[in-house]
Image 1 (spheres, one colour):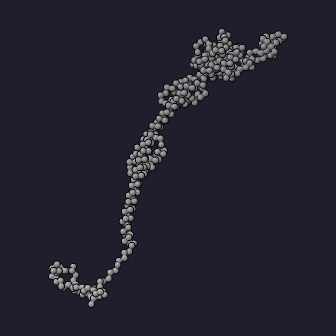
Image 2 (image 1 turned 90 degrees about the vertical axis):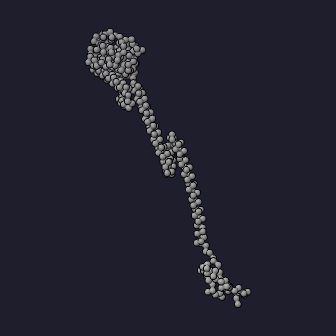
Length: 363
């Protein structure tokens, strides 16, 4: 233990300048955890203090644990009364880990006190005070030093347990074969250990899983959209083959207005144009037949209207001259005679109508 304390300043200096020491093999976090648990029971256990020193000088380990291991080792040196070594260790720690200076806030006030023999002057009766060797103060640890040392050990142990828990859960999540379950595990892991500086692998794996799931969902949505478009196109084609052509045209126009870029849009547009052309031809043909029927109706109505609306003027014809002097009883209606009666009649029996005179009358 005395030899180890003698070389402590050299080890810390090498750690600050090169970060690599030709000493024991790097200690794992499990050994560091076990050493911290032992040091809480035996604060100055030499083998376990050596574990702290080995871990602090190993650059492959996590910087936060290395910084705390070095701070705990420096506090242990102070507990042993090596104030000069502690001061140098504290300076090396602040140089190596400038952001962690708060891990070693101990000052001379926590481990020295004024000499009671000389009153802090360092001299007594004109000579150097034998009690403090002329320094004016003596070594006297404050309870704060041991409390701080214990807090460092507890912090290191807690971080080691968190690291072990994080590593185990990350390994478990990375081996999960179900994508959704792996994403859920990684979400919980990154949320719980959000402040860890080594989250990059977990975040990368989570981003990869999210990207794959998003791509899978997008492919599923595209496949469903394609199938839905095919079903709608088939329904529109069936409707176009039906008798309600106007409804089919409206449905096609509405569908193409909402889905102008779907794969079947060109076929549906061609079908729409065909239906519109058929409807236009049907309309023109209907107009022609309507005009023809109207013309025939007009032609048929003209004679009737002419008969009903135009009065005919009939010329009145009077009796022929001399008709008033004819014995009408002497005449027989030829239509009332039979053939035999007609042959039996004598021509002389036929009354003769006398011709009119020049004055238009008979004698």
